[in-house]
Image (cartoon, rainbow over all chains, first blue to last red; front, side, top):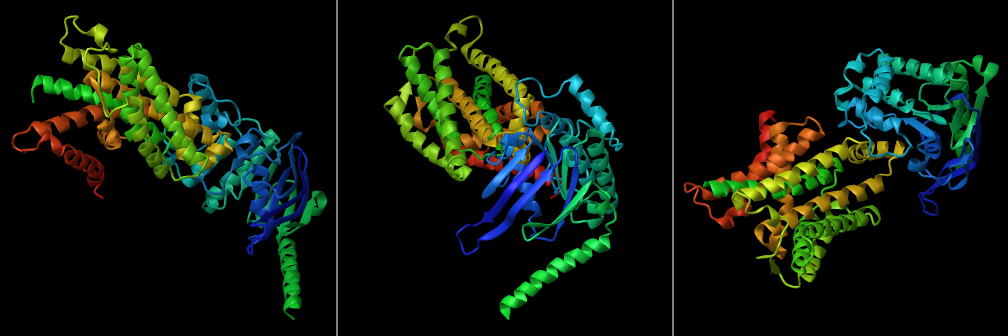
Length: 264
Length: 290
């Protein structure tokens, strides 16, 4: 169970550039549920993800992951609980390390790292098995440097890295946005399979409304730092992309009206 | 070049192999351009020399030199990590400070170790000529250091350090405390450089406050020559490259200075170094046709 209570995030507080990125966010995510998050640029999607990952400390409110209050814990201290795949395929792994070294790093996420050899026969076998699941032929290239892979291959490996060891929450930050359409579909289906097989509590930020509705159990829409839509179950099943676009327009229209009132 | 000159070049190359491995840790593994070494090399020499003269066991003296070097590295890391001073500038500050510290440690600019017992003393006079004993002895120490550093970098801990240099954001997301890795890496790097300084003092019979000038360039030259010759093929090859690069660098310098045709003299050393390093930097680019 992930819970956000009364989360406010204010950037540049007390300066002329003060910006409220999140405004009184209350959100509970049940264990094993897959939530998709949409919203326009500047709606607060990234900030929300940052609050969960630990990159951003909320100005007020509390963040609980499982039974742990992580509000004040920076990224490093909550890595044990949170797995993550970044938008940029280069960001989630080390290009100068080999595929198996990257996997070894990920396997110890949030755990103590000792002086035992990072790679041994047993670990290599585990990595080979997991990478073979991708059907990309990478299991025979475990000793290759990560920067020899294409963006899509690298993102697929990042996904394996994120699911290699247990976590309380998987965060996906528009992780297919930088890929070509074919590879994006491949990585998305892979994501869906991994999440379902491992019953991972997942939050996926996406720009694609299709993705947001096709995958997961629940969709929330952010606008101006607030949750303006939160649908799941049958209500969500009946929802079409057109409906979402309609809601998007409506919300935008409203703010436009507000602005006009101010100007008038 | 005479046989003795060749052995001398190899010996100096092996002493500076510690510097090269240290520079490799900072520059390549941590991606931290560290000029502290110009201060921690003579610091190691000074600490070892002063302690040996005071009657301390030379092995213990070398260990103390390493500890002193580690502290110097920690200071640079502190300035960078805690006080957010740009790494290059942080290391220059420590380097400058160390010049005064080294003078304090020695009490004068130069300390001689003539007739004092060094780590090498027990090995002299067993059939091998002295000028051969020194490089062989140091080669054994270099091999041990190389093995330990390699073994560390291939461990879970070492992987965390390499990730810190390669992709700090990713490293933190994996639960790697990148600040701690920088402290640890900088301490290790400068401890190795200081050990090089301690051995320099014991093989050459003196410690001098000015002996650190250009240490960073020599260390970097060794790393780059190694990379140019052996290519990027993993940690072990890179570390061996540091050692080979350091030895070849000294031989190249020795050849350049002893060649009558070129007409160079000892005072041209820094110019020759700069030309060699430039050459080593440009060569891989020319080969790629860039």
